[in-house]
Length: 151
Image 1 (tube, one colour):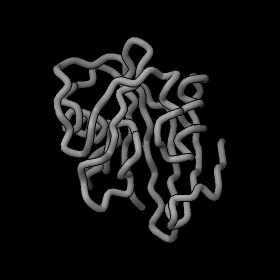
Image 2: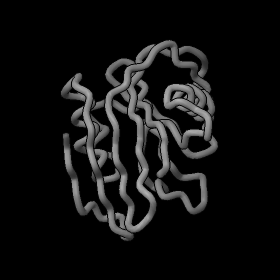
Image 3: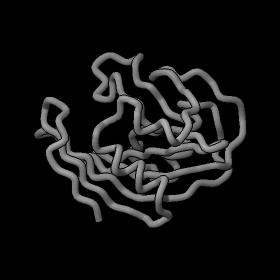
Image 4: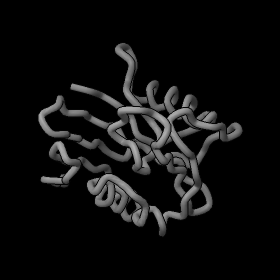
């Protein structure tokens, strides 16, 4: 199983979004996502969160909030469990990301971006509720969402 983190940094009614357009063979290519990435072998999710946010944005989280877990099933590949967080407290200067373009996007506009279809119900949960969630998203090899289960 794969383990990773995902974080939506918040400021002035906006999320910091990453348009994945710089890496070859990127399953997220052409999509907007939050920041984060795979956990290293000995990392706790929170350690990976802090490292990935710093690597991708140049920002250091002062605090963060665990929001839920996404079970991401893509075709016949190994499932990925994504620990999802939000943060509105961070410091530093935003830097260029080697994985794509970073942009502050008004929360009201986020759902209009090219996203994974399953990110839409997850983002609605983040925006509309403070409750911790679990959501299972299944995709076929053509990136078509075939199943959504919310818990």
